[in-house]
Amino acid sequence: MSAVALPTTWKGIGTLRSRWNFLPLILLPLCCIACNKNEPSVKTPADVVQYASLPGLTETHDAELQAELARLIAEYATPLQLMGNSSRAGSNHSRLEAMPNAASVVAQFDEIFPPNFRDSSRENLDKVWPVEGFEFTASTLHVVATLSQRYRAKREKYEQLVSAVDFDVPVDHSLGLSADTSYLDAIEIGNRLEGLYAAGLLEAGEPERAIEPLRLMLRVSEQLAGERNIVSRGGGAVRRGEALQLLEGIARHPAATPSVHRQLKMLVVQQLERWPDDANAWIGDRAQGLHTYELIRDGYLLSMLSYEELREYRDEIGIQQLAELVAVNIDQDELFYLRTMRDVVDACQKPYYERASVFRQIEANLELLRGRDDYPFVADQLLLLQLDQGSRLIALDRAKCEAWALALQIATGGTPPKAKINPLTGDDFFVDISETQVVVDAVDPDQGQPAAIVPRLQSSVSSFDASRDIRR
Image: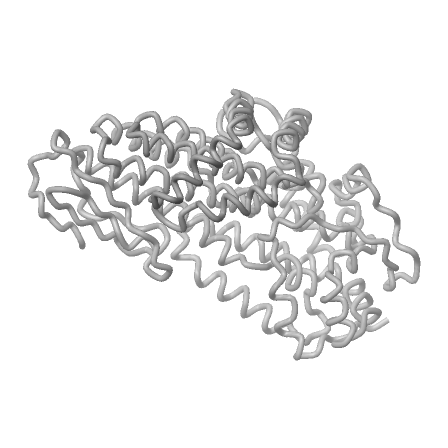
């Protein structure tokens, strides 16, 4: 059976698919057209776990693909191997051992924030959470106080859960795309409730008391960002961005003291000291990709496409031809994917602003293969999506933390550096020091990210020129 080449009109199809939608894998009872047999039934997570051992990849006769698998095994990077070790510094337990606790944590999240409660509460919180900064109008503060009181019991239960010494929500790599990430919605609600509670403390003139909710928000953000999973890593970045909004509100509060500023500086510095390697997220993402290929090898390609995409592919090439093409080319498809992901992981040794050529080359490689009979459909249409966007989000997360750390360092009397490179842009941060405040700007010039601004309190003002501009 010869493979059917994808027509060049397919070059843009599928680009709207996104793993950042946090959608679980839906396994539908479709027909495995490529093999002319019924799809095997996958009804429970226990059935999905069988693919974590990579039976299809292990049995392939492709020598190059076997060599890639050998490298992954040597690097301890297969789905089951990631379950057998922790990516967290200082951890002495395996991910597999942590799974029962993780299941308990997810169940507790469901108890605090039931699934049928989440949509309405997230909508309510969206309406009052500031787009940037941490300022509220008088009427909005009235609503914030009402929401805080209404959800007080839930917030306190959330605090108790995430403050526990053994709190952890490790990703189950053995489940691939079907791993439960619903706890991300619960954490979004819980962290925002903490932020609104802190807004009430700021309104009452108690910025120092607002540090404890901030500490909790940062702790949870750090937990998420430390997982070897790109969805969790992205969620951690977004939650940390919200925590930094609260940090801004505390730092700029009229009642803030030098002690408050020093505590804020310590919190941000600790985040930077414990920063996870960018590669961790992509190593986990690659493991999820390996699991996905196993499902496709066993006849579940169509289960991963939306009804709209199925109609689109049917009109473009035909569902049977699509299934035949993917089945015949699956080894070369997976080989291209693994080599591409190796490039992505290796690129993480460089700062984000030096990786642009890698992402351009990946897109160029895909462009050359589109329309050919060896086109890596699965890699292009399902897995290699938003590599640059995901990497940029992680870099922006770091840039915001570094900007606030620098602003707080100078505001608390530290000597300003001659220059500080922005990990997102590769250019220097713009730093302006006046008698009254420190401004660290150029955090994300392309997207208009707000500057980190910290007042200079009298007892923290050092003797260097107060009007000094340290731009390079």
